[in-house]
Image (cartoon, rainbow, N blue to C red; front, side, top):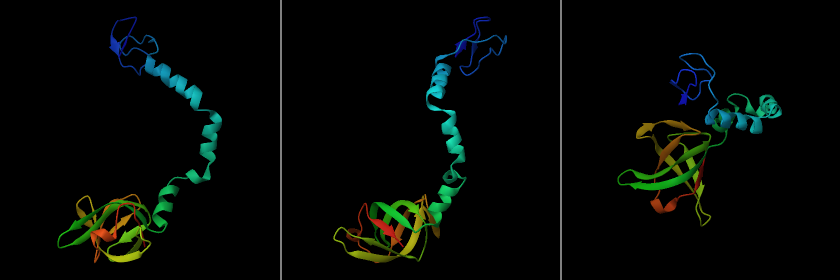
Length: 155
């Protein structure tokens, strides 16, 4: 809060003029910091370069991630009695559906493949998941020891 020198009323920090008497307010520390930051780090040539960059077109990053090959790094592994083994992680690229076959390589260099029996996201069973989603993959016929944290699951 800033105090108006003219009417002694308290006003918000982001205002340049008093909301009661319309008098000029002294610049606060937040405004001074903002001005210094803008002068030092935001140069017109940097803004022009960002505007003209073709790789920053709206939606290009998300489209690239969704259309690529499926890739998920395993963050954790759980064994659910009566259901199977669940590999939890975030999908980095591509999409995955229930019933797809996925593969990964163990530390021993052995390649294992399995069918996806189910996909779960935030305690809801879903049929398909795409890049950026945090999911759990229910893998059929896999022991908990066959997959470990850090494994990269691909289609």
